[in-house]
Length: 505
Ligand SMILES: *[C@@H]1O[C@H](CO)[C@@H](O)[C@H](O)[C@H]1NC(C)=O
Ligand SMILES: *[C@@H]1O[C@H](CO)[C@@H](O)[C@H](O)[C@H]1NC(C)=O
Ligand SMILES: *[C@@H]1O[C@H](CO)[C@@H](O)[C@H](O)[C@H]1NC(C)=O
Ligand SMILES: *[C@@H]1O[C@H](CO)[C@@H](O)[C@H](O)[C@H]1NC(C)=O
Ligand SMILES: *[C@@H]1O[C@H](CO)[C@@H](O)[C@H](O)[C@H]1NC(C)=O
Ligand SMILES: *[C@@H]1O[C@H](CO)[C@@H](O)[C@H](O)[C@H]1NC(C)=O
Ligand SMILES: *[C@@H]1O[C@H](CO)[C@@H](O)[C@H](O)[C@H]1NC(C)=O
Ligand SMILES: *[C@@H]1O[C@H](CO)[C@@H](O)[C@H](O)[C@H]1NC(C)=O
Ligand SMILES: *[C@@H]1O[C@H](CO)[C@@H](O)[C@H](O)[C@H]1NC(C)=O
Ligand SMILES: *[C@@H]1O[C@H](CO)[C@@H](O)[C@H](O)[C@H]1NC(C)=O
Ligand SMILES: *[C@@H]1O[C@H](CO)[C@@H](O)[C@H](O)[C@H]1NC(C)=O
Ligand SMILES: *[C@@H]1O[C@H](CO)[C@@H](O)[C@H](O)[C@H]1NC(C)=O
Image 1 (cartoon, rainbow, N blue to C red):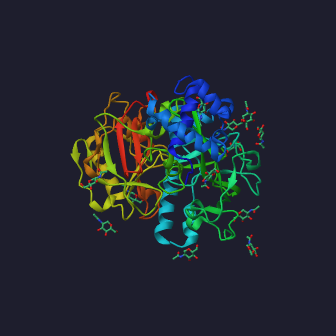
Image 2: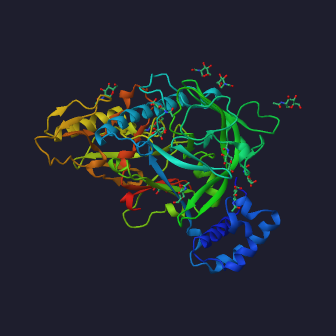
Image 3: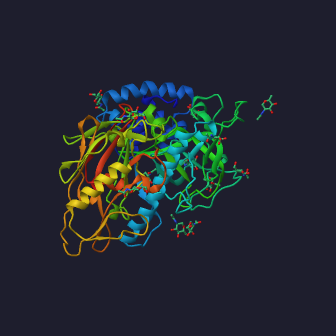
């Protein structure tokens, strides 16, 4: 989908690298050939200019990279997941933050489940236009994100804090002119103010990739109207458009790359979060940010490393794209990404669970990806297991722990203990076995959380308690994933994970 060759992109990286003092280019050569890049490298288009210039840079590029000390293929991009509480400057205590996170987590799991149910019970075009479908009342009206990502769009750039969503594909922001826009702290994108903006034609591949999210008005070819609906009648309607996303490379310099994104003119309904101006979809589909970046990356892959919840109030979590995302070392575990009912989701196969070192007798159907399956999700905080598996996990923990149980936080019947009689209590071990023999044995902090002084709760919920019906997948949430570097390799269709100190990555 992207028209620029790797070579040109890499050349631009080198020019930018020069600007920050990494002398990949001779100064005289660079200023002669790329005066605009040196003066003002705000976008790739501006920098490369006409077709003739593109040709010139291509030939220059090949000789350049023959001699470069940093092989350009090693270059990737770096961004950050910003916790909502850090962005808003929350002054809540860690206990309060955690209790709020549990509420949001239940709400997101409910949305994920209702989307799965909509897909599995009704496959009409109208249904597949739904990003989420609600028939169960939500605890909170707003689609409150856990993590946001800085999104820099257009020329000059407009900066957004967009919801980072591994569960959806489209990248979209609120756009002028607004027929209806929701209130937000973020800017509203003004296409007429961006020199690199263009509409996408109806016949383009990107527009076709919308599938049934394309509106019927898309027929005369001048624009590509889309609609994504939320089952509570919230919608974003707009034109699929083309503009540059500016990202930082791992060497700290920036690159601007054209992507197809939703320029939303009618974003109405109760679902939208007022702390973000849009969504960055990181799912598996063709319009997600990672899929669109694939033509300029060596590998279609991204990774993130979530810092511990209590640290997320002051430290962001790194997100890496392309080569920079690669893991190295001996302690890397890998499991295939499976196809499941929702094409955007990252399904994996669980083959077993151990508690306290002993394998549990969980029926094989509990984690079957062709029915509900299990997904990795960055936006859900707790982990949720299918009811049969949950019952066995819960009763096994209960049989191994002799502390008094107490009521959990208001928003979910979690299994909680009063640890005041045993301040140094160590929870039993917990291991998830995945397809292809990889096992995740996280530290206790990833599955037992302290929600109040001397109250420790199992950070694992019962999918069925969400009253979502049988199609809700089990969800491996971000607390379980914290301090693991998690790689989503879409080229190889596999997820890898490795223990890491995320705030040092
Ligand atoms: C977006 O615009 C760029 C620059 O004009 C072009 O190369 C690219 O093909 C366009 N992408 C889409 C999806 O239309
Ligand atoms: C939105 O802006 C208000 C007022 O400036 C501020 O108090 C609030 O924390 C901001 N919220 C977020 C999520 O940034
Ligand atoms: C499927 O969805 C369509 C459109 O929303 C609706 O008209 C139809 O009744 C639904 N079918 C079933 C079986 O729920
Ligand atoms: C760089 O480009 C932006 C947007 O086109 C413009 O506003 C700015 O003045 C330019 N800066 C220089 C140094 O040319
Ligand atoms: C926005 O979209 C909704 C849902 O399709 C529609 O009911 C409403 O009239 C639209 N608003 C405007 C101002 O076009
Ligand atoms: C966002 O919503 C929250 C909760 O509903 C409210 O307190 C806050 O004032 C709103 N902020 C903006 C910028 O509308
Ligand atoms: C348009 O861009 C200029 C910078 O070139 C900026 O100062 C102005 O605020 C922008 N207008 C809008 C509506 O975004
Ligand atoms: C599409 O083109 C036809 C024939 O030229 C015209 O009648 C119709 O109004 C156009 N539709 C739109 C949405 O522009
Ligand atoms: C790129 O890095 C600069 C400098 O560290 C930072 O200010 C900016 O927010 C980063 N951009 C993105 C999109 O993360
Ligand atoms: C997992 O194992 C199967 C069967 O041995 C093999 O075909 C597949 O390539 C493996 N996948 C990964 C991601 O290692
Ligand atoms: C998984 O589900 C599919 C479809 O529902 C079924 O055909 C298959 O037998 C199930 N496999 C297991 C191990 O339960
Ligand atoms: C899980 O939720 C379902 C539905 O609410 C309930 O019937 C079941 O008892 C719950 N399981 C456990 C172990 O709490």
